[in-house]
Length: 260
Image 1 (tube, one colour):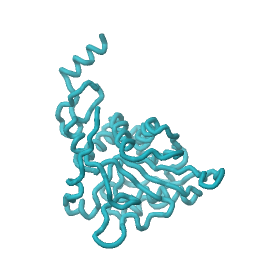
Image 2 (cartoon, one colour; image 1 turned 45 degrees about the vertical axis):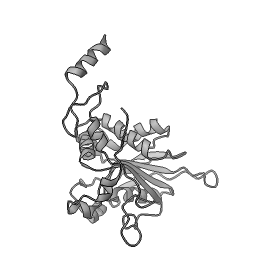
Image 3 (cartoon, rainbow, N blue to C red; image 1 turned 135 degrees about the horizontal axis):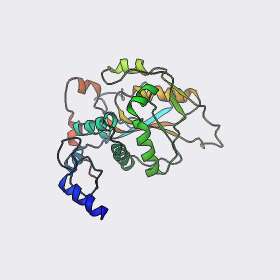
Image 4 (cartoon, rainbow, N blue to C red; image 1 turned 90 degrees about the horizontal axis):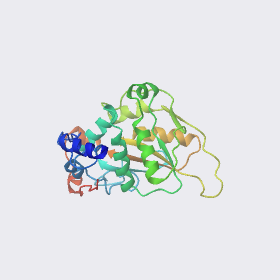
């Protein structure tokens, strides 16, 4: 009876898509992203083998050139297009935590499951966590842990000081803003050759890589040597965003198709 009532309610009052405000069809009462907007999400493919940034016409990748050696790779599920940006916004600022599970699902289907890894959500400072009521990276990490069957080490990394919002900052300003912002617990001694468990930092968006770089530096100073990063979305390279250009490599990639 309850299921029948919920199905009737879903039919009469369908959810509105967070990205386009259109009706969300389907039987899932918690779905808040329509099929059209899901089909418009663009998977991140190719690019630099280490960080997935688009390679320059000449020379090595500049995006990860100054990363600490411990930060060995970064992978994101989709590009931060308009649809992905709306998903992130409603997740972080409207408290729609179901979108964190959706984000984790995209990551799990895009990135190969790393064996024996420890998932570490990028921490928020206490004020933001109190105002927001949750850490979006923690929500994604918990859902990703369930999908990958990996542990979460939320206490491995923490904020040593608050930082201003990164949203309106230029790349160099972002790096200065998060410099020395993190502290980490010492890595446990390895039990044998190659036995050290890798750490995977989890976040909602990778923009300039400044946060991942600062977090990896803190972890590296405490003996962690194998660090990767996963995120739901990857922002366009800053130079392209600043000039409002739409790079052709995004439009040429295949839409990320999923099933409900």
